[in-house]
Image (cartoon, rainbow, N blue to C red):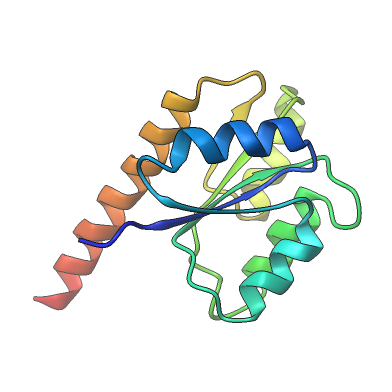
Length: 133
């Protein structure tokens, strides 16, 4: 089975590099420094299976990115896990209500994000097999 592709979006080089290094054992990894660059990448029909995105970024922040992705018919079902230094409940609720599938507070354990991604992929596989019967 081919590796799934994960898109990592974070304006902090160190966070992007850390996640790229950790996830490359499990997935194909693409990273972008902001939501606008990531959205352009997605709109150019690059195949991505899930997104891990920071909320606080320049040019296009994570909330605007989530809105933009959810407004694109071809991208609307793409799983999005938010990474944020903001642990306030209102921030989590806003991101989830806009269409994020999960929310992880920084600092984070990359194993937890891997487990959350694998959980999403298990559900997607189960749904695909259910509807292909």
